[in-house]
Image 1 (cartoon, helix red, strand yellow):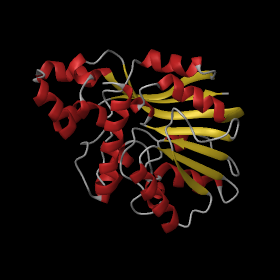
Image 2: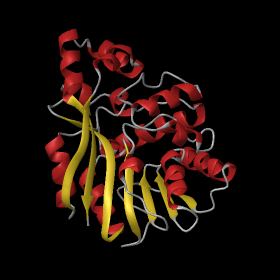
Image 3: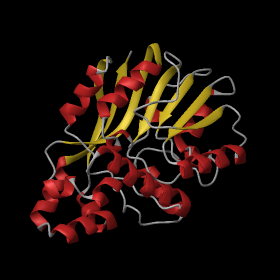
Length: 276
């Protein structure tokens, strides 16, 4: 798929999630399978969020879209400014705001107007005066040079066609001495071509994933130093068996069971940090 087509597909997919409240991007639970708050909370518990965090955000902010908890790793300090790439309905932004206090500032960027509107509603609902949401693409961040202390992201950069540009933009907006802390999906071996080209796989966060070494190299090439993986976990095989997105891919392309296991084993959720 061409870059603009990919963005259109992703934007439309996440617009549906924003309006319907379904989760669609987690490596640890059925994707697009639950409209309930309980479903999103169960997803979030499995990827590292605690009960106190889940209760500390406005209802509707957590759509269960992540693959890790960047806030838990970001070492956020009171009074800092943080930017969230692909902020969705605002879940990680609100957790960051809770951690940094009223002197801190949080900026969420998302390219889906429906997500931005939902996030702004949630901010009003929770009286988050130090959190703002900006419509924009993470390849072209609507933020000034050297303006934030940390950039966080949760299972979003893998959806961007030009990941190198995303990391260069993150580097641009981070202050000297600041840091990047992201959770994402990467590959340990290439996916079959038919899966890489699948629209369903893109919305399910699989098709856009790149090789782990290539992902880390893109971060380093952007200028970040001390780039390292803090934690990683394999994509559970049960997802490929139960996930509606994965089922659609399997049925459309007649993927054999042995190949399904190979696909699952090649997908890894990583938590990565880098410094400027």
